Every structure is written in structure tokens, then in C-alpha cells.
Image: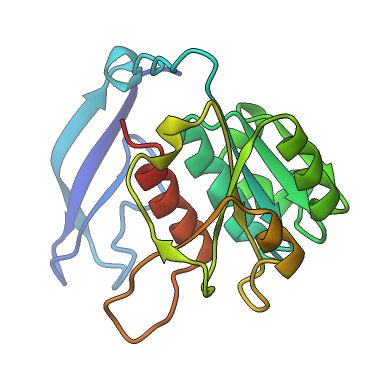
Length: 211
């Protein structure tokens, strides 16, 4: 990572205010009306300002997410990036879920596929049966008669915890739900019944792993 400089420009015709990388010729004309612009601010961000110390993990804690039959490569890439931000230890990609071998996943993960370990598995049920034998507590996000409102810091009670997210169309596989220790839902206040799966993951990851 290195220092970088950006500038804020304002269009003299329509008044649009927008940023561009300093010294880059593309973007000096207004992207809306193509009018002339002027620079109103320039800032250099130094490398030390962008570097943050890695968070310290609780001894022996392992946290993972399982993505089962999620079609959208864009959502998978977004989950990779969020998983890196929340410090998850592993991502299990199952069924038809695309892997970082697809460019669309890499485009939205922005390199997180290189920092978060992942593995691909054809059968999520067999995988979860195995991790439960190893002592993992398994949770899922799903609308279900067993579901309870998403708690805060639930997984702090467990050394090994796995969160399952399933298809946005058909939901989490019923046989996976049967293996779950608990099932959660995110309360909705609007007209929609659920969030986008990548958004839902971020909400759940923050709630379950909050310090």
C-alpha cells in the first residue's frame, strides 16, 4: 500500500461535485454534462493513515460461514470482503455457489479471496455433519418456525461457530436446518420480507460476533 492523492472538482456548468485521482486526465470534464470543472480541494492520504492493526482474537475461537447454493457471484464476492472485515476464519462454498475462480467473485471481493481461507464442497449436509462431530455450533439465517430474532454476541459463547446462508429463492436446505443448533431471522420493518443475502450476512456477522 502506498500514499495516494485525490482531488475534488466542481462543474462550472451544472454544479456537480465529485472526486478523481489527482493527475488523472479522465474525469476532469464533468461526467454528467461534460462541462468544464475546477479543482476545489486536494488531499494526500498517507500509508500510515490507511493501515490499521489486526484485531486480536479470543484464544481458540474459530468462526466460519457456509454459503449453500447461492447463485450470484457478486453476492459471494461481497460476502468474501465482509468476511475479511469481520475476521472470519473460513468460508465454505457449497453446491452451485461460485468460487473465486470466477472473475465476477474476484471483482467484488477486491482481494479478500486471498486473505480469507475458503474451500468448495459439493454436499453441504455431509460437510455440516462432519463439523458438528468436531464440536462446532451451527446457526442459520432463515424464516422458519424455529427461528428467533437475531441475538447479539451469541457466538462468543462457542469456541467454534458456523453460520449458514442459503439460496435467496428456495432458502436454506431443510436437512441443513435440521442440523442447526439455532435458527435466526433479521427483523424487518419495511414491506420486504428479507435483505439481500450479502447484506444479511454482514448484519448477522456483526451481531453474532460483536465484542
